[in-house]
Image (cartoon, rainbow, N blue to C red; front, side, top):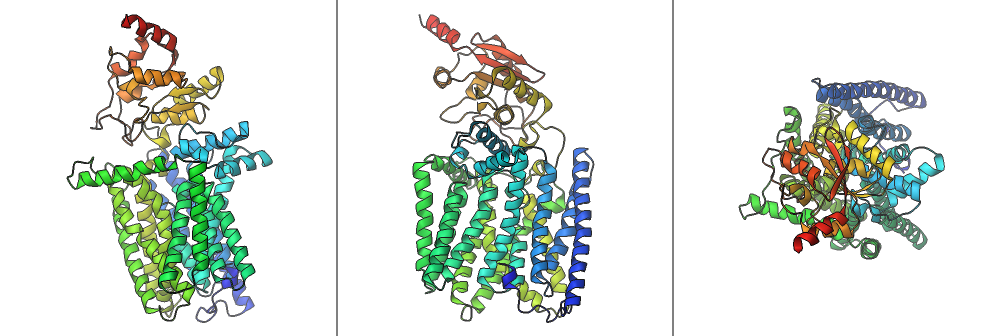
Length: 636
């Protein structure tokens, strides 16, 4: 792997690794400096989170001081010429473990992000019931992709640890594997371990690396498997014998099926990446039969799964692109729903916001330089490397139009989810450029090296700021309308009361934030509504108006039992400007979307029975028999 592709230039102008004694001193110096830097960085991260939790200033400064005090020296040791293969491997593993710390310290004891509640609940249900492919009440499509949940549940059952601790272990291993996988993949293209390490470091700068792809989510596991599937594909393409080619192709197919059973988008991206490699090989007249065969197998795997196991995946993914295009139309004046303002009312410091705008420019500059380098070496490069790096240039180029989607409310989520994939292309093509620039320097620590490290720091800060808002990254007091701060003692107590007194698995109607808690810790089946099932119309209806008959019929036929009402909806505006779901017909003009009367009207409705009442949370039980009798009486 990485060790087998150590740079032949080791020891030439570094001096530190010229003999066994020198290499030992070099390794000891690296271990000591990185251990000290890691301890200092972890302390700074803890300080940052404590300051944020207590409402004190300086959380952002402490956070980035902690991240950079370890990350930049680790990057320097990883790409330094005198670093041995074993030390480089150790540095990359340490780098991966340290970069998991921000998410681990953010919520070490249980789920916090929106999707984490869904995935944790899904794995928990598998432990309790032993059944796969159950529909999830929070993110309905994830039940069709049980790879992550089955892995976590199996580990929890085998070891006796909690579902959450099993999940954390799986996620840490996946984070390390994706980091090493990028390095190994780069080593399939260039026989220089410094380039491999540089690719891993550059990939770690993408906006999903620190938080999104370290959360309990199916992409966090699947993207690591994707990288290793690409490694298998490259080994199959390069194989010199039929047996080796078949063996590596079989491994790639196995990993492809595992990805398909874990995450829809990752499986689609894998098919696209294999297609680009095959296409580039064909255009550049490199033998591509194996690449096309692997592409066909990947497309067949994904298509078969979505057709037979999860036919609703298309409907789940389509609205994001459709709404984004409509909102682009609104921005252009064609009557769509319009765009969004970046960092609107954000508490992120000015320098972090500026870095977010500068990061795509840095990526564009580096990618342009990599394209020039590819063009200069096109006649001397090894054919497979030339074709694969051309494919990665095309993949990396997709990052830049995707950044425009961040300007639309619906496209922003899709854009963020695409960057972890397109940045793989940027990492693989810019790594040779970085090493070429470093090789021009005559000193181990040069101006160009310092400039590159500073650029890495800038891009890490900017991409993280663009990819995740502060309430996801930092702790703080409970905030209404924030996925990460919805878990208040009152909501937890209400969910626990319902589970304890009425059991699990009850269907109920709730807002987005109450639904997260009732659907995970409460083990119920909440719905927040949709265009085809507008459950939010119950809340929107004016006092005294008749209940929407079609909706009531749906609730009765689908055996809904409870209605959860959070009266804060009449007092506060959600932090993320959503009460139920993205398409809700509720105005967002900076004032609460409901009046007090709209939320207290349920107290007087004869077909609802209040069974729980707290300071803000009320739970009502539907009495459809009483309602039907009332409707029939009024009809006479």
